[in-house]
Length: 332
Length: 99
Image (cartoon, rainbow over all chains, first blue to last red):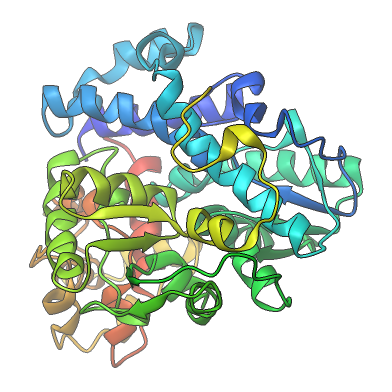
């Protein structure tokens, strides 16, 4: 293999080992979404973001830099970049998304917290101990770094007495539910997506929505974790007519995102194809994964309106929103 | 080039983790369903592995690391091969092996 690819993956693994995330951001940034929600710290059941939505604006900054340099540019930076990164948090230097972008993605965990509250679910939050779950490094084959990190996350759960975790995105869900039990003997924390938790509750329907949306299934939810009916059930309960694209449910078509860190041009080509399938059905598309959302949104270039499922559910189901998390508000 | 029909590579992968590419029927459904449209993925790649052609696998590291791990291929595989886990294992083998 190209030595440079190993160095690029090494940077991500080093960050996970040294700084707790492939793209380290400060705990203040990662937990900012919760500042007005007064969520209790810890508890037997916790909402676990795995920092995925909060990281997206930073990932996007890095990817746009990489796109300007071409495919494999991260890899071409090679050993020098890895040596420098061990000393200095390079991400903090090059990825500085504006407050508006950060607020847009921060809105999702805030939406989910409010939805769970409305559904009567009791849960806490781990704040600075809500760590990235390690999905990218696991997918790239850096097994040793992921196993060490999984032990750290399991240790955090143990310290806080966590027995059940409610996740927000498919990648964190599959890491905690399907991968950690293979990496860690005796890991028996119950893991469910908030979509699964909400689907089994009788939600208050305050403001039913109207109109049609096309659903884009996440590959990980649909083909790894069998989360397929829940989003449809919730959207229908919110009053929306759910339409299916070509390649739906277990036949869903990837957004291309998983290739983005090393091969952004390939990722863009896959995303463009998916956007065509979705656009043929409806102008409004529902996503349920931050990577799908950002990758498809970029490929569509405004021709399809992509929104996270939590935005629709919040509009339909939540009685009293925290002012700054209202849809369209980009206040930091 | 590595010796043809050597089990050494497959045995090495079995030691790293669960690897079941030997069950591949070589039918090509996986390649036909791959969103990336890379003909190599995963059928020919697995054939290189089963034949012990480690050097050919290393030459194709870009294809190995391009895979989306989306399981579109796996959903259609008539032999039930755990394709994405095999690809993850090959990535690990490439990373942990020499340059």
